[in-house]
Amino acid sequence: MGIIEKMRLDGKKIFVTGGARGIGKSVATAFCEAGADVAIVDLDFEEAEKTAAELEKNHGIQAIAIKADVTNPEDVDSMITKILSAFGRLDVAFCNAGICMNIPAEDMTYEQWKKVIDINLTGVFLTAQAAGKVMLKQGGGSIINTASMSAHIVNVPQPQCSYNASKAGVIQLTKSLAVEWATRNVRVNCISPGYIGTELTLNSPSLQPLIEQWNQMAPLGRMGRPEELQSICVYLAGDTSSFTTGADFVVDGAFTCI
Ligand code: NDP
Image (cartoon, rainbow, N blue to C red; front, side, top):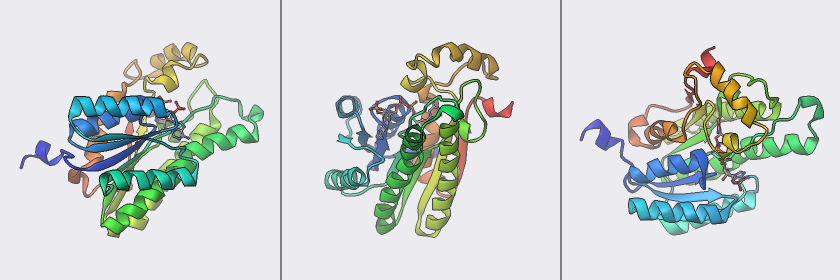
């Protein structure tokens, strides 16, 4: 079998949090193109259902929609129950849901700080932990977390200290889980995207005026597109990445090099 065939994901069962739109939807699409069945997990159930229906129609795989708040342990437990009852197993988890708040550190309330840390860091822990428990029992699996280039640099000019701290936490959490579970065949990696054109960035009125500035700073002179994160995630989900664990993949058009 050639390398491209080996990278396919036929029959793998995958969940994607924040899968209804943006990076999650794009990567879920790639998983389906590669032959996997997916659970689209999101707060926005209506949008998750639309995405799942579109994936089933276009790719002839099984796609289900699940409403869950990744910060709520009961939601995460029930998400796993639904996935196991639909698919019978879980091979890959893409723990991707996240938000950003641009607020000067001195003005940030406790609630605002906690919301970002809860979704971006605790949410990744809860969903990766739940996936890990299933995968350890099964004898293996692959977990991919979404960190950010903001784990490596401090973005300017917008103030986003809670986001930057949460994403740095995701990288160290990823490495910690990778080491704990390495001998039991559960791999844990993360991706660190640069600015990517999604609702998070393009539809935020406060960020609109900044996009031109970011593009001027960017070595490639532009933001990334969600589909430019697809192939790294398909690689990490599949069996050809069997020696890859505890790694962080920066996909940022060299933004963090400057
Ligand atoms: P989007 O805002 O386009 O999509 C995020 C999705 O996550 C939304 O559907 C949202 O639902 C869902 N979500 C938010 N909170 C929760 C929650 N508590 N439980 C379940 N689902 C939730 O964002 P992106 O696709 O741009 O971002 C995806 C990930 O990539 C995030 O972790 C982000 O930090 C990271 N990232 C993004 C970059 C970018 O430039 N876009 C750069 C680097 C990293 P709802 O609409 O209901 O809120």
